[in-house]
Length: 238
Image 1 (tube, one colour):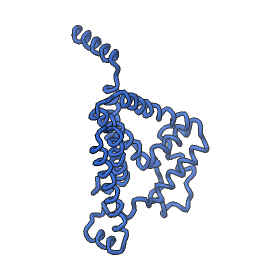
Image 2: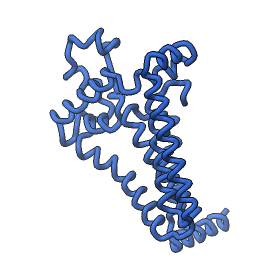
Image 3: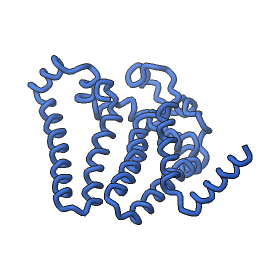
Image 4: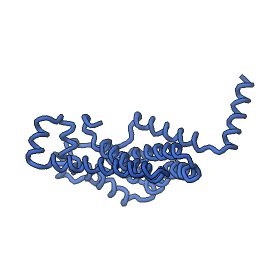
């Protein structure tokens, strides 16, 4: 993750680690474990912030250019600097405000880009003449499917988080609560990294596996019995 220079993945990993410590702090009844979790979270944040600040100094910059790979240098010096991505998201927003209800149609961001891009940005912000993605999946959904499509997109995410939350508040075993928290954080991490990238087949496989895991873990007793009976009938028929 670090050597590829993928900024969204690294930032998502850091935020997820901090949130995991916080959730563990809330879910564990042991005072010693809560203190250990709080200290670990503070150490991780302090080390990350301290290292980042030092690398922005003159000596840190020289050291990084001499010893750090180009991918890591991209993370260190350009983590919040990408005007092209910002402008692509801004174009998506303009497309959404122009057609807020149903958008421009699925996979039609290229039409949004061609309509709202400023000619003087070519060669300065945009090295290519054509973009078919906003590099922000949420803005992409808003621009191409409007508020109707965006609410439909959010529905399974909200349902999954609600199912996990319902399980979390009715479970009293610390290990199980931590497990549900990790699954919820996995879903949160995927959504967060999609604010700077767009969906591709390989990450989507991981997303569908997370959703499937949530459905399996949050089934009620009656649903499990029905599934078992249906499976028995299928096996008998075979």
